[in-house]
Amino acid sequence: MKTESRLEKVLKSGHFAVTAECGPPKGADAAVLEEKGKFLLGRVDAVNVTDNQTAIVRMSSLAASTILKGLGHEPVLQMVTRDRNRIALQSDLFGAYALGIRNVLCLTGDHHCFGNQKEAVGVFDLDSIQLVHTVRSMRDKGQIIGGEPIQVPPKMFIGAAENPFADPVGWRVVRLAKKVEAGVDFIQTQCIYNLDRFAEFMRQAVDMGLTEKVSILAGITPLKGVGMARYMANKVAGMDVPEDLIKRLSGVPKEKQADEGIKIAVETIRKVREIKGVAGVHLMAIEWEHKVPEILKAAGLDKRPEV
Amino acid sequence: MIVAELKEIPEIRKMIDRYSSILVVGCDSCVAECAAGGQRETMLLAAALRLSYAKDNLNPVITDTCLDRQCVDDFIDRIANLVPDHEVMLSLGCGAGVQALARVYQDKPIIPALDTLFIGETEMRGVWQENCLGCGKCKLGHFGAVCPVTRCSKKLMNGPCGGSKDGRCEVRPDIPCGWDMIIKRLDTLGELDRLNEFVPPVDWSTSHSGGPRRVIREDQKP
Ligand code: SF4
Ligand code: SF4
Image (cartoon, rainbow over all chains, first blue to last red; front, top):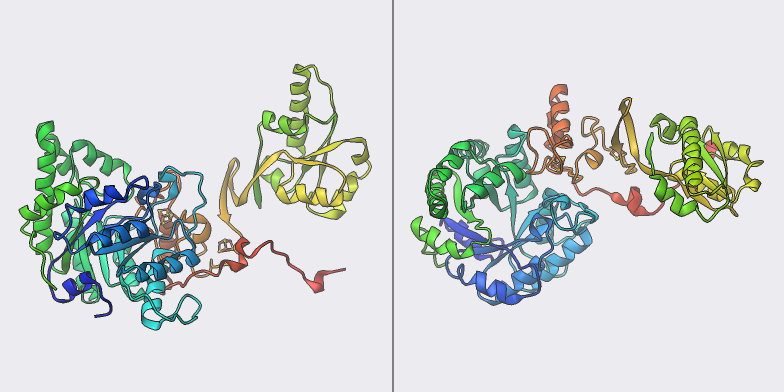
């Protein structure tokens, strides 16, 4: 084991891992995390805490991770390079480890033009792969960027995201290989709706031997209805929502669409489990955390391993 | 070259209304190429201001002149005879031209008439493209002569983000994805292998993050 991460133990011992996302509130209310978190407690191996997702100002992921940790969760601290330079990022990594956080997900982040602070300066001092490399050097070499030694290195289990559906398509696996080379331990993918394209991505990753070096968790986001499906298809960067899925949802009455969305999510989980190289699932049930137990139960994933 | 755009007349007027004599000073270099501040635009702006003031029954002295280059002292000296007769200079140079005037004529207020945008290229008449942020350590050799610092909206160094779609940037569909361009170009050249290597964090100290930059070339000094 490289770290004291529970997620690492689950993956290393060969269990099919389950993680879920929990978005911090748009405000300073810790009770919101308690409320959302109670649906996930004991049901997932780790909880991803998003970092000002879609560039909207929220409670910091470091603070929210710490609060969730206090409630008994195993947090995955998400970190975007959009808002903070390498000084702030490395300093937050020290702080996170000191506060008992053992997993980090390194991201570049959505561009700030999508959020509610469009006039902000985009920092982008590092990119996500450089951040992965930075965390790995901190952990394994005990060095910050530039080579200065660290007294107590933050021993983090290092994650990154990958989008099998973005363009240029041929490039996605190359970029994954770069992340592996930089030192990533686990990958959580973009929401999967196009299973064929995802299977192709996994096939390439397996062929290149990447899945032996990195655990890939398939991203799942239940669709709440046909409106959300269309929005994801047309408005969200890097999403691939096939037309037949939109048709399937519009084929059921409005009040049944949420259930249909959950059914699709459960089917997707079942199907990705069959794909070689998939080590787990990552549920991004955006503002639908209370549905996670139901989805996991239906998918036969409601018992988490003791590790 | 430097690409700039003329500010709106009301914005300019807010800054110069307090003066009664205005010397409008153009620059016939970069900002002439991008049709923002050359001889023609300088005359047009002076005329537009006269008209705008006349509507308000005001009649400030407005003289226009154009320098070959507003960022070079030898050229700036050529308007020395006009300067004393005017309270203010309204510059149609880029930000560097404005500041050069201010350095040479220390007791004169200098007001910018342009918004200085970027270092770019004239793709065709009427289309200018930002191409370089002047980062001080040119990396184009690695990226097939397409600049990731400038052309990727997130300054990514190790490949495209997850938002690239059909060769377009996630930021706006009218922006080509810089990384799509890099990959296509290196593919054409048969040099995709350049991208396999991990690019470590960039040294931004050579860019503006290192404070204002200055080049001194002893061999060029008089
Ligand atoms: S790498 Fe730097 S110097 Fe070269 S084109 Fe890009 S911004 Fe300009
Ligand atoms: S879409 Fe392309 S240009 Fe835009 S931020 Fe992503 S990689 Fe950069």
